[in-house]
Length: 442
Figure 1 (cartoon, one colour):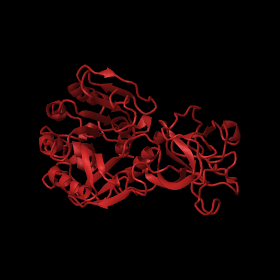
Figure 2: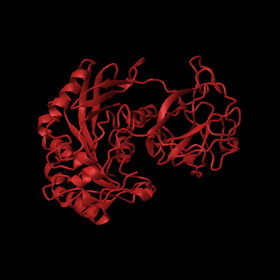
Figure 3: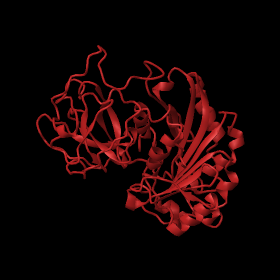
Figure 4: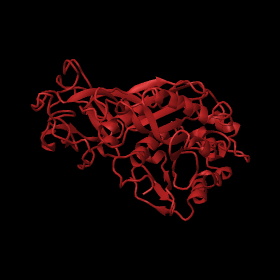
C-alpha cells in the first residue's frame, strides 16, 4: 500500500505538481490480495451491538430454520451461546437475526480455517453492519458442504468486502433479510459513462420509486484508465452499502461514480467534468424509475481534492447551480486523504455553506504538522470527539458547524488506497444512518 508525504502534493498555486502525479497511483484497477486464509486472527472482545434488523428467524412456513450440521463448534456453526463455539479462541455467538446463532470471532483481515470435512472456509467481513469497528469471521458459501445454496437455512449467499481490504470480496453466508420498502425489488448497477466511464447504483429499496439521498464518489488520479474505482468493481463499496442496508444501519442511499481517465490531478475532474451535466444524466436515469433526489452529497479521494479549480473544490463552488435544481439540499462533502498544503487552508471555510456536513479523513497525505495547520484553518478552536482509537489517532470537530476531521495512518491500518473505504464505513452510517442521535461530527 502507498504512503506519501504532503511535500509531493501541492505547488504555490494550489495545483498538484508532477511529483504527486508520478507518486500517487490510484490503483483503481485493483488486485485481489492473497494469502490470508491460512493464518489465524487474534480474538475479539465479547460485546456485539444488536443490529436494528435483529429478530427471531423463521422460514416462510412459519417454522424455525433447522440447525445445520456444518461448522459445528466453528465459524458459522449453530450456537445458543459462545460455549458452543468450542474450537474458537475469543469466541462469540451471534444471535438476534442469525438463524440458530452463528459462531464467530473478531478479525482484522484474516480468519482461521479448521479443515474438517463438514467445514466451510471462512472470511473476514466488515463488522460495521453489525455494530463493530473491526471485522467478523463469517463462513464462506460452499454448495458441496451445504447444497443447494451453499448456506444453512435462514442464510443467503452474498458478496462481502474483506475488512480493511475492500478490493477483495468473497461470497459468504449472511442472514436472510426480508426486503423492505419495495417487495421484489433488486439492486441495479447502471452504466453511466461520464466523463469517460462510470456507474450508478440503485438499491432495491428504491426500485418502486420515491425520494432518496445521493452520494457521488470522485476517485483519485487514474493513470491506468481503470473503468471502476469504488463502484461496480475496485473497492466495490456497493457491497458494503448493501450490508449496511440489510442490517438496518443506513437509510436507502443511491451511489454514483463518474470515472475520469486522467493521470494528472491538475486536470482530473477539470474541464471535461461538469457536475451539472453529470447530475442531469443521473436524474434522467432516476426519473425513468420514479425516483427523486432528497439530497446531494459528494466525496472525493486523493487527486479529487488536489486542485482548487477542479474536483471537490469545483463542486463546492457550484453549490448554487446544483441545489435546488437537482435536490432540495446539499448534505455532505467528504475529503478522503486529499492535499493539505497551505494553498487549501482557506478554501473549505470560504466555499462551504453553513449547515453543510463536511468531513475530512486523513491517512498518509500529510505530516502531523501539516495536518494540524489544515485542521486549524477550517476547524478553528476545535474540540475532540469520541471515535474508535483502534482506527483513529484523533477526531476533532468545529465548535458550531458540522465540520470535523478524522486522523488515521498506517499504524491504525488505514492507508491511502483504502481511505475511501474507511470514509464510507465510518461516515455514511453517521450521515445517512437510521439512528437520528448519531452524527458524523459528534
